[in-house]
Image 1 (tube, rainbow over the protein chains, first blue to last red):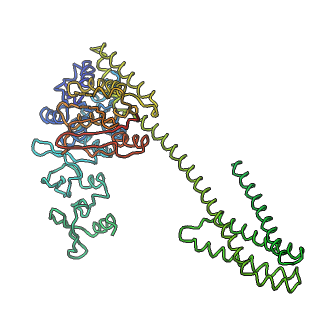
Image 2 (cartoon, rainbow over the protein chains, first blue to last red):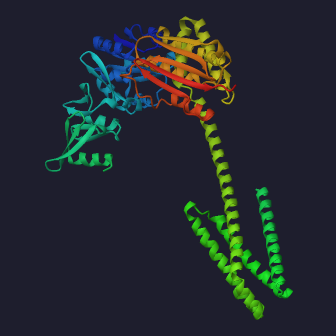
Image 3 (cartoon, rainbow over the protein chains, first blue to last red):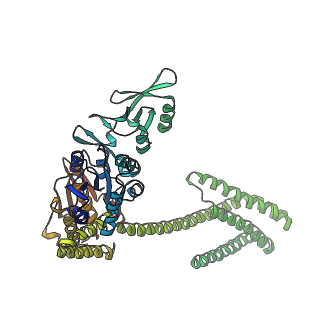
Length: 248
Length: 345
């Protein structure tokens, strides 16, 4: 028996999924319906389901942002009306995706595909690579969603002062404190706007608007002093990049 | 263009006529100093030919080169040089044709006055040509500019109207799909609402203004569809003065604003959302106020949404050539959009 969650902010859209799932009563048990990403996140952490039907556009945090916060993401079948950026990511990484409105036949195929492959693929890995691919969508570059304890915090990219590598995590520094995000430095280097965020060091990405001063420091190295007073080391190559972006 | 050609040939005739008159006058003046008709005609013909050549040169020069503001002085020197060439050319050529010492003396004595009359004629020609050609240039520019503007406007209006959110359409179809199973009557009702709404968007001509009640009826269709999709989470309040019944506005101008309000309202909170729409008439303006709750901490920057407020602003600019008709305010947790539509009374 596979355990399933349905996450969509439109009640009627959830009803379609539930109705179509009636045909799989023997193999699939629906644990809960969720109306937004927060409920969804809580339910996923609580039940550790095998499969999630997930809408992308939802209030507060979207489907991708919600998945980013899950420690061990389950397999996902996306249900979405229209998303030109995400479809590519779905094609290669999701179990399947359903474009609304979808037929029962199409739905059955997606569920059967999941049931057939479930024991083979490691769902967490698959979902992580999906998120990596979905981050190409420009909507993903405007904010960073993090989890602090049980709470979810949405950080607009504009509020970020600098990013610092921290083992397997990246520490996102903001005026309100710093938050850990389960991503790599190169992920942020690639997705953040390169005219604003510069990777000045192997372990640091800074927002150039926050720099007040750049001082020389030892041989070939520099130190950037930010508005908040933080001192960030700048490597030799980082200094070259910084000069390019600042146009000096 | 044929018109322009005939203008040019008329100018050529005028130019030749002017030359003949000039030559005749000069001949008459020289003759009145008791020289023979032969001498007078030769003088008149040679001087006028040289002057005509100078005028033609300056005119041709200005046809291809319009002096900028700083280079009028160059033009002045050009005129001086041409005058000198015409005057001293005649001084050099005429003695070869007329071997008469009295006449030669007369020509030398009158050289100053000949120089100045030539200069006046050439300067006048230069001035006329300059005005004429710059006007021609300007006309051409204006024509091109207005054509480009018209093209751009047509394309933009077309595009703006085409950008109906596919999200809205597909999600509505999905809701209908859900309703068909257990509430077929409601499904049918929603299909009718959706078709009425789509028909409304397609048939509207941007140049044709609609009355406020018509626009609100169209908006109501949109709101009804969205209410089916989002259920109890969405509420809408519409209030409108009696005086507004006759107010007119461009079609579909409200819908993107309300769409924006719903989108930001619904996607910015997980609770229920009330979008309020108010219409008032004030000093010959129809003022529409749309308010929605939002979360200033997490609201995404309002860019890149394609057809949002910027689209409305652009349309109002194209229609009224004004940029001050859309205002937005964000205070506390309420986002307010105000648009003003000038009422032509």
